[in-house]
Amino acid sequence: MNNSKILSGTNLSKKYGELEVVKGVTLSVAAGEFVCLVGKSGCGKTTLLSLLSGLERPTKGDVLLNGKKINGASEDELALFRRENVGFIFQSFNLIPTLSAWENVALPLFPLKISNEERKRRATELLTQMELGHRLEHLPSALSGGEKQRVAIARALVNHPKVIFADEPTGNLDSATGDAIMDILTRLHTQEGVAILMVTHEVELAKKAERLIRMHDGEVIS
Amino acid sequence: MNAGYLVRELYHQKRRTLTAILGLSIGIALLVILNALSMAYRQAAHAPLKEIGADITVQRPGDVPKDLAGAVFPCSAVTIRKEEVEKIQSLPGIRGMGKAVLLWVFDTKQAWIVLGIEQNNTIGPAVLRSAVTEGRFLDDGKSEALVEAAYARQFGIRVGDMVSVNGSKFSVVGLMDASRAAKIAVANLYMSLADAEGLAASSKNLQTVSPFAPGDVNLLFIKADQEKITPLAASLKEILGKKATVATPESFLKLLGSLFALSDKFTLAASLIAIIVAVLIAFKTMAGNIAERAREIGVLKAVGWTNRNVVAQLLAESVVQCFLAGILGLLIALVVTFGLSFMKVNIPIPWDMAPNPHFLPGGGDQIYKTLRLPVHIPWTLASFAVLLSIFIGGLTGGLLGRHVAKIKPSEVLRHE
Image (cartoon, rainbow over the protein chains, first blue to last red):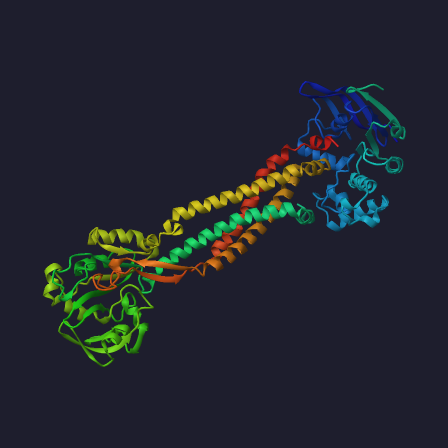
């Protein structure tokens, strides 16, 4: 890990009508750092993750991701920025049910002008790393929960992101499978040097991260 | 746009794909069938006139002498003077003209329906030369006659016999069975136009109610530019008077009385409705598709697809679906029109165009021209239907792009 900031949020607030979900949060993540955002359900973790990843615009405050201020960007600029800098892992995997495992991994590459062979090569490489080399052509419906999440991790990595945002990545998995997924994320962080910002409400899982940020009622408390 | 994604989406979401394709294909099939039927009725309406090589027939109604003896004109066809014929010939849009004289001749022993024709004119009754069953057709400049085969049988007339019509003798050179070929401009005795004009001009009885001179006629057959038929019909009435009977394909179409034969406006309105229904079906299906796939679209945007990328993908899916719907619609229409082509259509011949005296037994019966409905789908209509389907696909996909832009990944991916 180096100390240069890859991601920072300054005085971030998000209001839905009168309800302020995130209240003046300031935080930063260094390149290659593994940070866990913990807190009770409904405390604003996922909203903060959305603000930091450019999925959502803050009502107030600034987000700097890989040196670029993203809160003023248009929808399409944000999409392109995410494609080049960010990977997502969701609790419910969010795989496209009609696409095979390798096609799901290659999904962020579809709009790029690269050959299908190249897409498949990159997806196969990542799925092999995830020990899913034998499941390339399987549809998500034919995969177990752990396999689906490993496909989702491979998808998050396919564009060589600077930061991976993981929202409760083990929430839908049993504890053994959840541990395996956490091992993969830890390995990614240590071996590949990818910064990870993970949201979880399980303190035990969060202990695997380098740094813990606790949230309560829309604010960072420690 | 990713073709593999498109194919898998259409293949794996069979219910959604089939609903969209079937819905739209019914609209397209309806459009094609309606237009094919409309064209078929129009084509059928041409049949009675086409079989005598004309697009328009003209006659002028008048009076019949009180005493039905000798040569008289039917009340539906009295003198059209030579000057009027010349005036008509000079009208724009007329490509050719045939003339004829139709007479009823009441002799002491028998009644004749006589038709004087221009033997070598391809417009008018002379086209019936192919209906000669025995002997030969009429030669120029000879006083000879053709007799209708059934009439000849009834009265024992044979080729080579001499027949007397209102005191004039004619050599029978052939027998003719025109009953299958035509329903208008038929008679039981055919002679040259000059001979028929002579019979009419020499008939005192006829002259008392409808003065007639050589060169005059009482039936006209006109070949015209198709697009000028309607204005020509109006001009003919201006020359011959409002009571003149001007028969056109349009007037036969009206006699058919079918919904499809009513007007171009009906077909246009029905086609528009079919198109609107097709667009609505496509739009509704695609809108449902997008609502159902909001999370998927959210994922695409989250992983870096721009609105343009997403819209292009959905647009391609929509266009391919609608194209397939167009092809299926066309196939449905082909099957339906094939079935409809076995349908018989009876075109009523107006009493004033029927040559038989209506006061004789059977003379007042309605005559029909019966033919199989000539339904077919021309290439132009088929191409239009497929292109329209593609256009609907593009329109629907494009319109829904705005909805896609409104989907925010954070909102659809928020709640697990």
